[in-house]
Image (cartoon, rainbow, N blue to C red; front, side, top):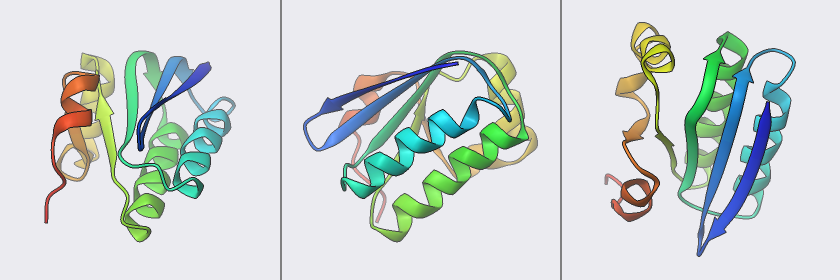
Length: 113
């Protein structure tokens, strides 16, 4: 898996490519936690190039979501393909995460209050 991070003002876009599994999820975790520590929000995680995600990858995203929320930050997901989207629906996480179609949409929407 490849993880690329890009600042967008007070926000950050994290792009993951490839398989997010037990062996690769620590790279994604590090990028998310680093963004939380820098108080960047929203944290936009683009999963459009992710071909597979397992429970450890999902757990990484949930951990990032919880940590960001603790510090009044937001994690938004972008570009879930059908396979990844199905994983989130089965775990009912599509009701927890803000899921957007595009990065620009994720950067523009206001947080729920």
